[in-house]
Amino acid sequence: MNTGDNTSYPLVTIVTITRNLLREKREAYAKECIESVHRQRYPSIEHLVIDGASDDGTLEFLQPYVEKGYIKVYSEPDKGIYDAMNKGLAKAKGKYVNFLNTDDFFHNPLAVRLSVEQLEKEGADYSFGNAVLKYPDGKEVVWTGDLSRLPWASHYCHQTMFVRTELLRSLGGFNLDYKVSADTEMMIHLCALNTRFVVVNDELVTYRVGGYSSQCQHQSRIDHSTAFYLYIGQHVGLSQHDCFLLWDRRFFEELAPDAQLDLICRVPARYGQHALIEEYVRRMQARQHSDKRYYLFGFLPVLKSRMRGNKTKYYLFGVLPLWKVKEVGCPVYVK
Image (cartoon, rainbow, N blue to C red; front, top):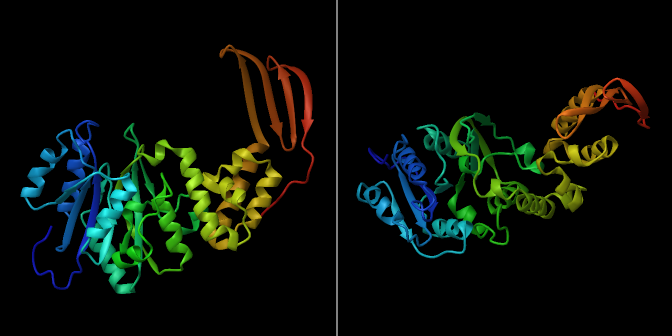
């Protein structure tokens, strides 16, 4: 990890947060995380592990990695993961800093090198790339970083981001008012400031789905929509409720088609309007020919609905016609 002449390579700080790894049976994940940093083909890295006063043997588990020089460990009580991340930020000596969760790891041994090279070449403030999402069932999906998807919180994985340490410090680090998604709040803040970024078109990190924010979806929605409204939405004609509806594109399930289109039309082009239009058209086309069945006791088919265009017919036991419903309004065609 740290070999050769480092003079032409700015120091990079990787911050990882731990607490009671053994109790939560996450030692294997932590091992993979630490070793993925050590395998980076970049000669100037410091890896800081900020531990929240673990009392289950975590520090003893980490000690061999300290003795090998892989990591530096600081252990003391904290007020949660973002408070711990701020402590790591305060201790960072690198020009750039990255926050890599214990459950996650660098997918690519060139992740740091590719990111820093582009940051230095472009004189950018931060970079991000693609992540491999790993689900509990073993399924893997590539998450392509795209800042235009910022309104609905699928822009990029924050573990792929490398940011100038002094810039992040100047913003006050992570805002502890956001209990679940302070990382997202920070990314939105950076975007609103029109800071310069570069995109690394490669898979940089493997992100295990099912972490803390994944388990607190409602609070994530509140945190994200609040931050997006404060920093961007209110300045581009979106209400706080609009921002709430846009999160994870939930408005497609929560609004009628006409209201969906009305909201989409208010989204600025730079924030993914075209992608939302494409999604809207796809869903409308799918609705043109859709059948649904309704079951009694979970197995007895008692009702069937058949949609054709703006007309829906209902059948008892799937064969006896009951009634017809016609949606009022003109179809919308978007080129």
